[in-house]
Amino acid sequence: QVQLVESGGGLVQAGGSLRLSCAASGRTLSNYAMGWFRQAPGKEREFVAAIHFIGSSTSYADSVKGRFIISRDNAKNTVDLQMNSLKPEDTAVYYCNFLRNWPRTPRDDYWGQGTQVTVSS
Image (cartoon, rainbow, N blue to C red; front, side, top):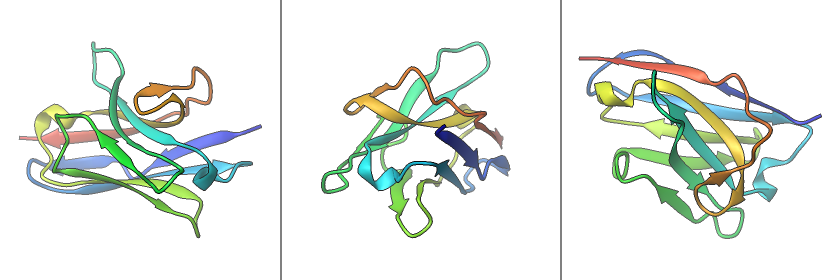
């Protein structure tokens, strides 16, 4: 049973930084294209960033491009999201998942509990 666990969220002031981490049990994440998604209150879940398993190509939503960086830590079997210059509109629950289609379509299963990110103005 594969389980994805997100961590690293918290409360931060606008302009600050957070680093999220996605860990998996039972699967080596470096073999898969992975994505980060987020869901703000009252809104649909949306794509944030993705990293491919071939050459570690990346893709970002326009809203986070230049501020967020997705990367892998193969030694820890994690996919991380470095979030800089955070804005109040980045407030959401952040999730990671395997990708069904590159770069923005997640699998329908494997959603974890997510990690809350709150950015105060």
